[in-house]
Amino acid sequence: MRKIDYHMHTWFSGDSEADPREHVKQAIALGLDEICFTDHRDFDYPIDSFELDIEKYYQMIMFLKEEFKDHIIIKWGIEIGLDMNYQKEINELINRYPFDFVIGSIHVINHTEFYYGDFFKGLVKEDAHRYFFEETLRCVKNFDCFNVLGHLDYIMRYGPYENKKVDYNKYQDIIDEIFKTLITKEKGIEINTSGYAVNGNCGFPNYQQIKRYYDLGGKIITIGTDSHTSDRVGQYINDVVEHLKKIGFKDVSTFTKRSCDLNER
Ligand code: HSO
Ligand code: ZN
Ligand code: ZN
Ligand code: ZN
Image (tube, rainbow, N blue to C red; front, top):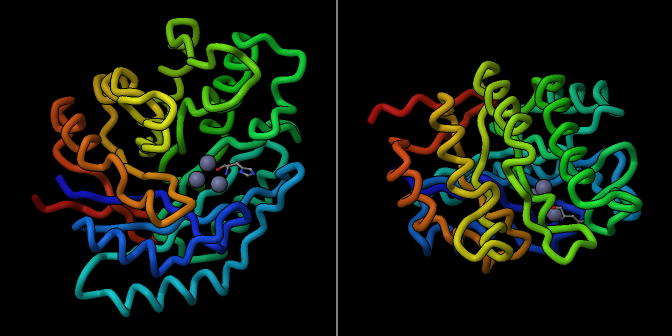
């Protein structure tokens, strides 16, 4: 199974200062086969700005791709905030540029977000989590512009609750429908290793949910660290690879111009 980091942020993202060249060097030092930059673009993020200078970002990644071509495969992607209030803008942006790979993530729901916490105001945990998964399903059904759904259950990173963990059996029907919709649409999920900092022994989502996705017929899967600093590039990827093999996956998925690469192995 190839080792990839398909979720990395740099100084082109509103919340990172990281030098993309340092990400590449770290990935090579760790022996990764392939990486993809996925800087943020959200159209309606409250408080912070997640605008993106796409032209400059493209030039920089193309330069690095050429510079390091004998050492590692580099792809150009984006993490787009899926937001039902901005469908037209999101589709237009994705169709305008030759991204290799698109992560669709839910960061904002109806002008409220999770990081500062407006979303959770007045909601008990169960209602907040249900609302999050229902909105994720709505986005997965309505958007076609993405390749994988970002950090499926990272809502548990946030919220004013003493125990932030997702109680899966309460929402498994919604999560199953998310998985089935993705599978029918030939889209996938990622394992986001930023989850290890919260869960200790797994990413977002956990391995039971990954197995559930696999058992329902899910094949398309990427691994990403969600690095906002270079020291996190490649983190936990070896552990994820071992788990994926045990579940039954033969390989991870990689993408070129938003199409899944065919792996002749
Ligand atoms: N970086 C987080 C959210 C965030 N950080 C907002 C700063 N402001 C989503 O990847
Ligand atoms: Zn971020
Ligand atoms: Zn994200
Ligand atoms: Zn991210």
